[in-house]
Length: 55
Image (cartoon, rainbow, N blue to C red; front, side, top):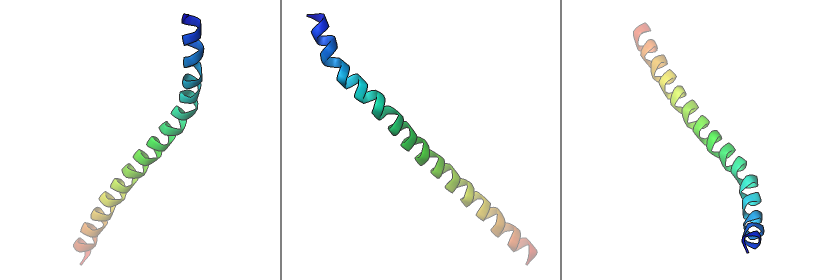
């Protein structure tokens, strides 16, 4: 009986192993892009402040 349950769960586990890396990569890319956008905003504000000092 327990062998049948194991064989019925096995396909779902293999699907999770295929989907998990894709989800992780998408999450990482979104996180990376948000961090880069925040860095760009900070650098833009620093640049604007330096431009104001020169004028």
